Length: 83
Image (cartoon, rainbow, N blue to C red; front, side, top):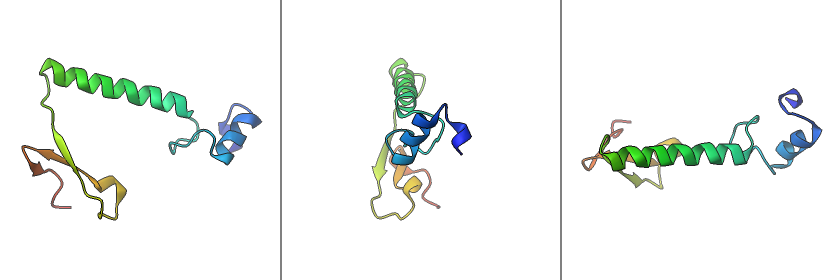
């Protein structure tokens, strides 16, 4: 695993949880956040241009699987309700 990092300092940041905390051991937190912000901005631009319709979501706090807790809604209908 150590070979994935630029040097011992970066590897230590990963081990202590100081950096690389987005479940990607080779992507610095700042780079991850910057890319995420670019994606969010691009999505907002698509909505503002009218190319895509804005949606909404419901937070299902009691669902035990984190990836299913944010339920995407389209016209008020839960897209993944069969799960």
